Length: 113
Length: 112
Image 1 (cartoon, helix red, strand yellow):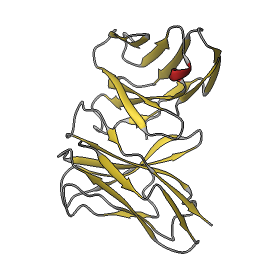
Image 2 (cartoon, rainbow over the protein chains, first blue to last red; image 1 turned 30 degrees about the vertical axis):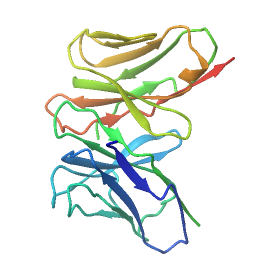
Image 3 (cartoon, rainbow over the protein chains, first blue to last red; image 1 turned 90 degrees about the horizontal axis):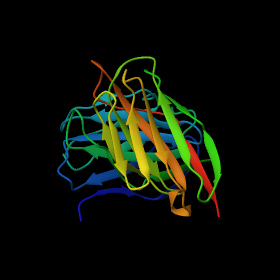
């Protein structure tokens, strides 16, 4: 079955440590996205990538970094510069630009103490 | 960024009652999508509306796009416990980025 895989489902880190969240898709989608979800805040865009080796900042990119070396993979690094990293992180993909639906992974719940 | 206001934030209903969530924008939208997120799950695409005044139905769910393309609604008739979850709208502004902006969502709680 095609889909988006995020791992791990739960992640715990100490404050001051960088952490990388994995996102892999086998849908052959060109575009990939990272969203952050906090209670009552909806989904806020962190980064997005339209093609391999290219990515753009979203609304809340500070304290995060990404790479897009392969079409299938779009890992997100939460750096120590992110002031409030504890959240639910969702990766999504779509066939491309324009009027297309987003397909989401199951998410990673990150807790930083 | 562009704001999409979604109301209400929460809605409690008795099973069998109807439910409606609304999305409003101050700017004209090129299209609007609706997603459902079950508790503990991830958002799942439900539908997309593109045309002014468009109405689409999926069983007990009715989706509408306003004539001015600045608002949309999702109406559920005779709710069931399986309808529990958070419903999000996601909209693209006319002439703007292709990336959709999500509303804050409406959490539906259905009491049996």
